[in-house]
Length: 203
Image 1 (cartoon, helix red, strand yellow):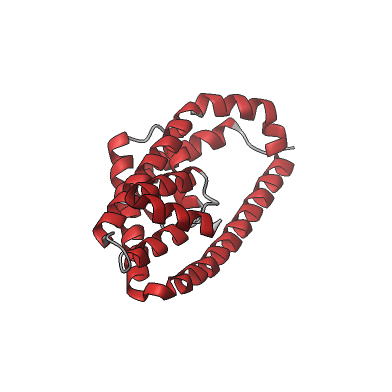
Image 2: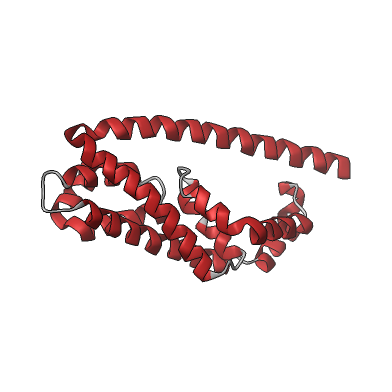
């Protein structure tokens, strides 16, 4: 996959970077770290500039985030209530849980969107609950853009600084991603256990 990504970036430049990053936001398994760090390296071997790569990748991120936000709008609280009403006994969830989560996102949503832009996998998917909670579009775009811009500037600059050794950054980020995934897995397992215990007490 990496070779394919690099070929597209070499062939289409800024537009290729923008398209790939947009796809990365919609389909998180596409490695943004490869796109961004190699994009930074390309600024040392082509006519591409750091500012151009940062702006095109940020534009792609925002486009992808908007797509997921719109998907989230279709999964509103009422639809989730219907799902919980039907499958709640299996999921160990109640309608009140949905409203609590929705209220929490209404209160902390903007900063959640911002900080999650630095967390692998979650950085893309956070746009869905933002849409589900009908988060103010202006705030969503602002915090998405700022968080994404910081992430992109750091990786593109590192890729440009290290040059031909850009793959070292990718390897280090993979380690970072694995640690994050492990932590997320533990949190999910812990949540499942809590919900299971709550369900047993309710019965």
